[in-house]
Length: 520
Image 1 (cartoon, rainbow, N blue to C red):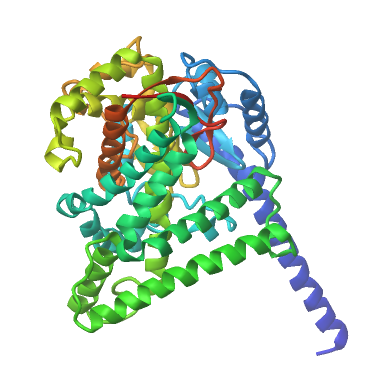
Image 2 (image 1 turned 45 degrees about the horizontal axis):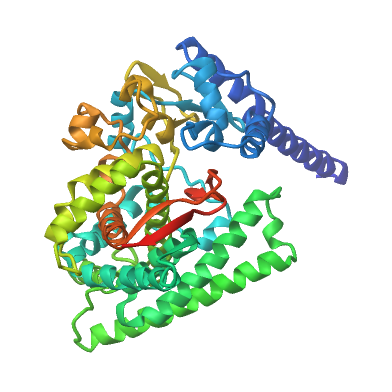
């Protein structure tokens, strides 16, 4: 074959490759999205027209920036500030609407029956891996897995969150909560009251509870890990809030270098704890009754019963990722729940008084409440549920559609996503009544089923097989902390408090929670 022929073949191959690549890109960012848009509109779904490549990204970002610049009063709906674009989308186009997540259409689902289906049919609507490469430094773990890996991890982790195990952790809950109360008492000791931003105390409280209950005798190492994780989370939010360029994490940067150093130190500390626990277990020592000990014992049994191969049990790296997740799932959820509870009880003094009366009546002179006593706090439970309804920690749950799937009267093509806007569902007047935006704990006086009319409309922890594994842990910790605060203090909002719910990982109080505490 002549050299000229070889060159012609090479050029042809290059041309075919370039054309194929260009078609693939053009199809992904234009033809396919337009085809999906026509399909969705034919079914009566409404939304903004697709914009090349970016979809609704720019408008979403602009609306978030604008929303954060506006003041908010305690009686306002937080949805326009926390989820401004989805809120306006539903307002303009109705509940049967969709937005563009870049070139991917994301269908809003607010119907209770369809919501139930999505949460139940976990294989038809799998978890979307929304973690950016930067976010993975914080940890992956159970909440980000799907398929067989999720099934295996859930089975192994389940025993750590059984109620009988959680009951054994109550002394640790009490100990850490009491330490925070003592600090507040000292600050208020001279005049009997003080003005205090309680937000950092609540963050440290929930971090210490996780450190104590997850690592037990390794509490100091656990506390150090929490401090490092907090620093890493702050840097991650900082990076994700700026204009993030794909691949930029590989470029020389002080921030990325620091993040990698922090992750390396966290991993090293966890590896040391886990290796020591492994040695002790192999030497025949009983597993400790902390979260890590129970998790490792469960994992050890899984491997023993099913054979020691790469597909059975969790690797050390898997255990490390789950430990990192313990911090974020537990610390984030409980700290924001307590923060918004104190804010709302400061505004609604009648409910604060009712809850305090119940705590004093149930606890009597017992300073170290048992599980049964916590379980008898009906008013406190009603309040916590209502706070979770008005201020759910997670505000949106996206799910993938990988093949054409029926959902009620909808036929969803492969390549679209569905989104459950938890915050909008919780605030929906059609589902909750005209008083949906009002703080009314009495709506939960007969339990969740009665309040929701047996519909899937209260979903602060998700629902179905993937419901948050740590919900009982979070609620038990919140009850303990709130009960001790009520027993020792009255509180009201300080004039310096600025109401600014802000979605970071969960819905944080952007400027803290300034209260005036008075000792009882």
